[in-house]
View 1 (cartoon, rainbow, N blue to C red):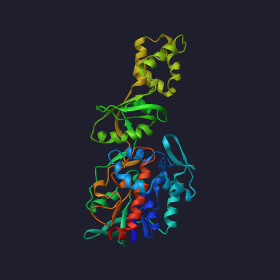
View 2 (spheres, rainbow, N blue to C red):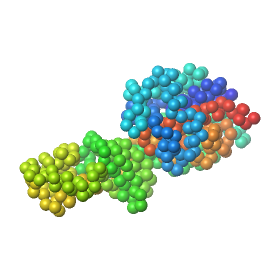
View 3 (cartoon, rainbow, N blue to C red):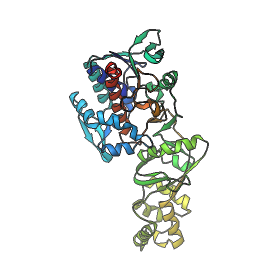
View 4 (cartoon, rainbow, N blue to C red):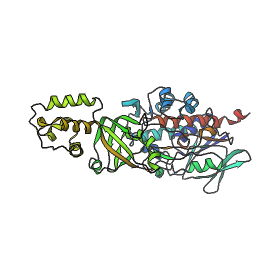
Length: 414
């Protein structure tokens, strides 16, 4: 049995390792000159490989599509992945939120380990080779025609990634191959991406990171999307974990031309009344100016915009704040308004929302329901999760399942 894997990213490398380990003659086609370019820059070059959460937690992180992953996660989950990496001398460490990283802090170590693992089982890697089209023989896929016109025959696994970070090779080419075989591709959006903010004061804070804050999108629904944790101000707007997760819900709204009001709670641990009582207590007899006192509440660079938005005079003695002035200060600390007007696009997005319809894929094998001999794995599928290592684990798991299924195809089809 021969297996052709298109794409040498996390899903493709796991697929190749699994197929070759199962005895298949396996070749990986990678259009870029080096394997796993996107993996090498993921997590700001540190690579959040997976998460320590249980399977149900993983399933919940994939809105609307998580149940599809039971089959893949049952066959190959976190412990299997970490065991494989340990075999290749990659040690890992767990950080906040259950995120698991390589101890070295180098995403390249993970990429190199997966390449080594696949090649050690006999898989062959052909870089600089583009898969131009699928070879269809009546009702099945029998191979791939490469960019130079060469025909390769065998089962085919499409693991090309989505459209995010297109400079690394995930340029949407997998969707073209999927459509060639009659597959439906749902609308594609950048996900886990920074948000552009209208207010100029936001850009003046570029580089400022906030911890333990709550960001909420005021979309008009009963349960507005939001998150608690860390965020970062950028030259164009905001980023960081809670912003990236929120972007999944907001990008389609922004793409429709709408603006999205946001509310930033700088003191989510305190309700407004408790915060007001704290201000009364701390400013009583306080000789410092308000702007100086506010350094005990927020980072220094945040003080000028807060004073401007609340209409308060920073030179005023903190102890002389009136009740209405305190109310305005509490208001801006609990509900700092911003307006999202755009996003960082596919060039900055961590993953792609949308992709090959899951209804047309067998979840127990990752094989196409339309064309036997064709498999899909990783981000090319209509699967995307919030930030935290879940997307990469899905790529590894679906890649593995596609690999062993394609390698055993003769047995499966009798």
